[in-house]
Image (cartoon, rainbow, N blue to C red; front, side):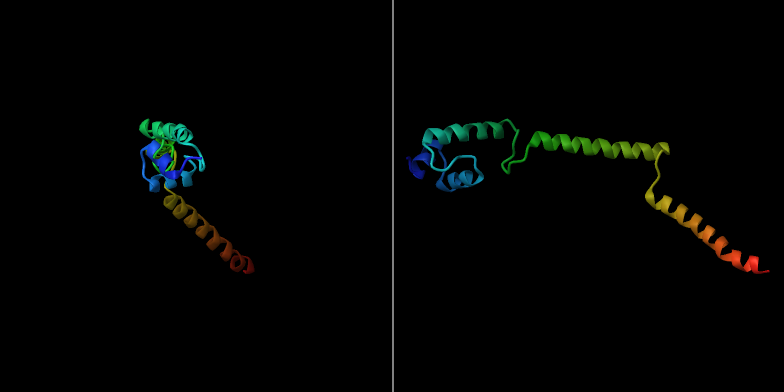
Length: 115
């Protein structure tokens, strides 16, 4: 079995970085230098190809999610401009006013019926 120093030299990285990558599961613990390189090279290719960030996020997926959110936001703005939707505050005010008027009429019924 190779030592951590040998694996670090083969991968051209410090022991701290090697331990960090082993902790993340990128390089398996107790492997040979060749196995470490076989695990490390695809990771570096993914980083270089901008498919992964250093913290493990899928950048292409995150960009797609952001684009979908931006499209949804624009669709909502367009619906407001076309009058297909209204702001919740306006709807709340209209419904509250309507219910307040109905309540007032219902409360006045007993006094009208008593006459």
